[in-house]
Image 1 (cartoon, helix red, strand yellow):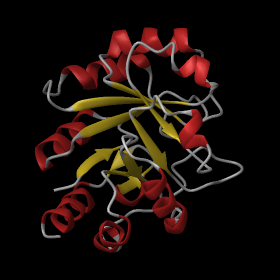
Image 2 (image 1 turned 30 degrees about the vertical axis):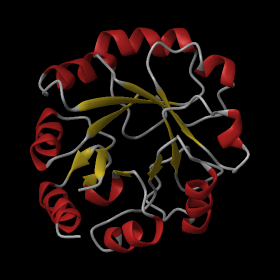
Image 3 (image 1 turned 90 degrees about the vertical axis):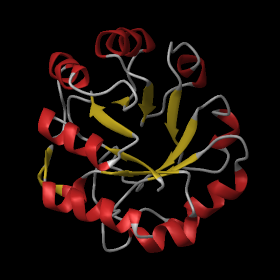
Length: 202
């Protein structure tokens, strides 16, 4: 089964279901303008309810490295997912590995120290979580351009298209959020189960 991250987690019950279904990681969004924003205190509570083997990812947008490092220590984050225009110098100041959203092939060279590259829908008003399908052609170009850096596919993935996405792009990881929600940050447990069923049966 492809490694799967369930992002936009705001509730313990959703995180625990993701873990039980076989999620590789859960994602906490620390960008205050996001409808899936979660406080450090709440993220810490959820994180403590999970097994150590379930990875915890913090999502940030143009945040200072000192702030990211502090939150990472408090919550017990394993990775920082960076969705803004963070300078590589700031990325390399982080105390945990970072995942970088890339919008051009050239950025894979700039952010070569990233643990992985994330391909999401490019939106001029939002930094992710739009539910719109990402450019799969661009995603394929990223998988071709990078060698040692794994690729995470995000953007509009659902139980209806995940099998095709895995076949066409063959990403190392996938990241899903809005298609398995009843409202931003509130996961639909039936939709989550159906999504994982599609992955397992692929």
